[in-house]
Length: 440
Image (cartoon, rainbow, N blue to C red; front, side, top):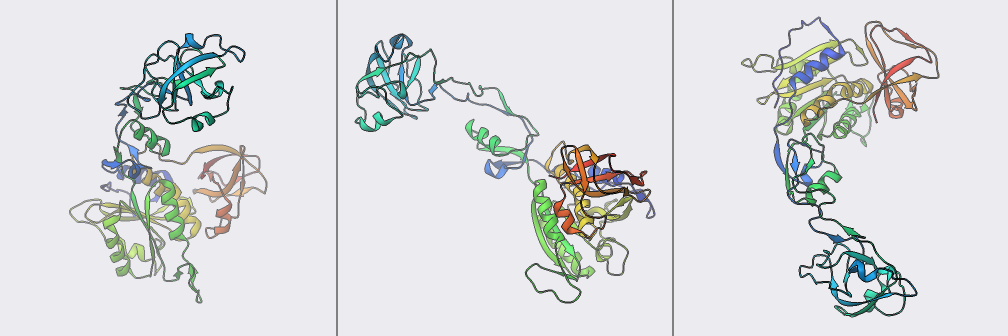
């Protein structure tokens, strides 16, 4: 787990976005490596290079159904003058007993079967009469008609170059090659490669377990009936989905009422399955902002820097934030504001990089680019705050989606980017070049 870094800023300090993020990333550390079975390691990050123990493929094998022959025996073969070869047996994939191919001979071979001794090339079955003496055939029709293990004669109607339709030993990777580098995220292709070279387990940083909970007595679960003054809890669903998108194993906890003792107990109960806790709501200074009330005094007196520090950031949306560690393992906790857009933007800027750091990734940030602001009037931004506006990005251009309000969830669902307006900029006109954080 992580250990919180000392926080020297006073309670009235207005933190910049970069200061807050740097504090988080200086505190959070990659999770300790563990050995996992291949499928359990999907989505995890390798902590060591993987060297190939055996060449892939491990032997020369046929890439076609056909006949393994000597090049000289089919040289000059044609429709008019086919090469007639004696079929000395069949060779299927996985067969250990290899048949010797001598002059004037052929072995009927299936895809993936090892190239038999003496054979130099493979003639596809489509270039032959399939061993029936009927002329060229399509596919392996002849194989299904011939008796199992039959021998006889095959007519070959086209020549074949040496090593044609042969997958050479080590043509994919050779023994001793580096198959995957440390830091690689294991997706389906990487899992396939590991299995192909015989690795059943791999050493990785595990996917972090993230517990997400929202606070507020006004919150009701979807599908339940709303009473006067109530709203549906969307934040816990949004942020749980965000955590999974970032690569975490995420657990959503139902909304907790505005009671400090209940919230504190709920968080402590969740620590057993958490590498990171994310709360949303209750971080301002109102009478019912219980996250601040519940967690401000949490910490171990013997561990300087422990507990949760609540601070104001020079950003919009998302000014109130909290960060620190909690519990005996110093589990990091991010306390995000409760307005839907504020919580989403805050997660993207702070929680996602923390999750990616726990995973052991080198690049923890969303990609950024420059774009031309199009359509609409000039954008206004409060002086001294870095503003993040929802936008729709495509082909080097970005358009704002919805207004600046931190409650506009419908507009957020249409956005695929955040438009960044720096602290020293108060107005941005259409046609201006702006920084864009790509969300998809």
